[in-house]
Length: 286
Image 1 (cartoon, rainbow, N blue to C red):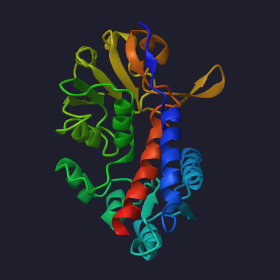
Image 2 (tube, helix red, strand yellow; image 1 turned 30 degrees about the vertical axis):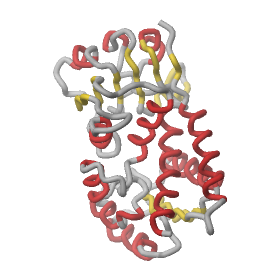
Image 3 (cartoon, rainbow, N blue to C red; image 1 turned 90 degrees about the vertical axis):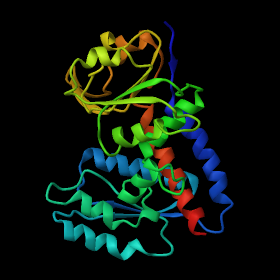
Image 4 (cartoon, helix red, strand yellow; image 1 turned 120 degrees about the vertical axis):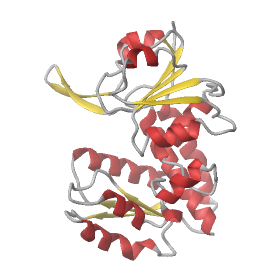
């Protein structure tokens, strides 16, 4: 079976170009403050890519790159920016230091500036289909990708492997809502789900977000299914570090009607959604 490659990089470029025109017409640029408190290789790369994307569309940024090993240290950095009128978004790059309480940090960000969509109030608004809230960036990016490629979700069975608060749970809420690009029947699974192979074979759409390299294999995918790979895993292949997803792309893709690559699939759409949320925050306060 020939498949459609769901090119998030190309779609993200289109969205960024539109956002650039929108930002250029605003009285002043939106402003994002990013906190990098527990830097390591991956976090540094993710932050750099977000800052580059913001600059590309005209969003002003401030990077606060200060290691923090306690909750209070990070809170002291966040508080001065929380209610600044010239700041439209606050973003704390995860993961945090093991001794930092992630829940307290998330709740310290005003929900109207929570452009990551992680605050409990924004999660509640998502559950209630309140459009004034912010949708977490990766689920929003996935929905946008499906919509742009005219992949129907209404009445379809979506199996999501992974129950995180950043991807699995909010995506289940988003795709099971009433309305366009939703109305799906969603099963939220994890690596402990019994007979995951049989469950996945019932899916019209599989979303792999478990954080395990090549978890999804060809025997788990029925012919014609759509596969969305959220995973970013670094593994060693022939002595070199390579990026691979949660899907074994080479064996799975021949069975799909559509599939995302890694890299270049969901990742760019996550950043495009972040930019959209920042502009939405600016407009809501202007």
